[in-house]
Image (cartoon, rainbow, N blue to C red; front, side, top):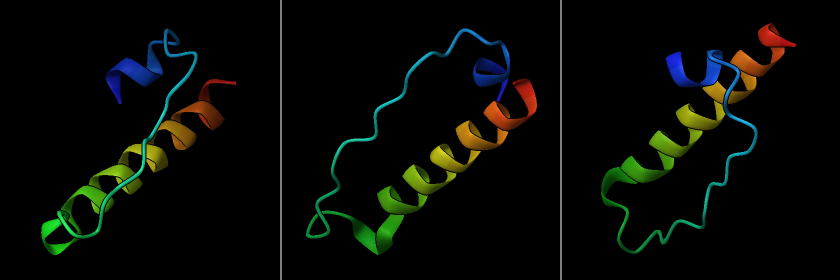
Length: 46
């Protein structure tokens, strides 16, 4: 949140996730939280 709210993040890329190696969907959940944080912070900054 701190990095995104600094206004220095101009772009973010979330690469594909391989469900075969994603134990208990951990990577998917982290990616979803990261994306939600970026979008949420972007809405408040702009």
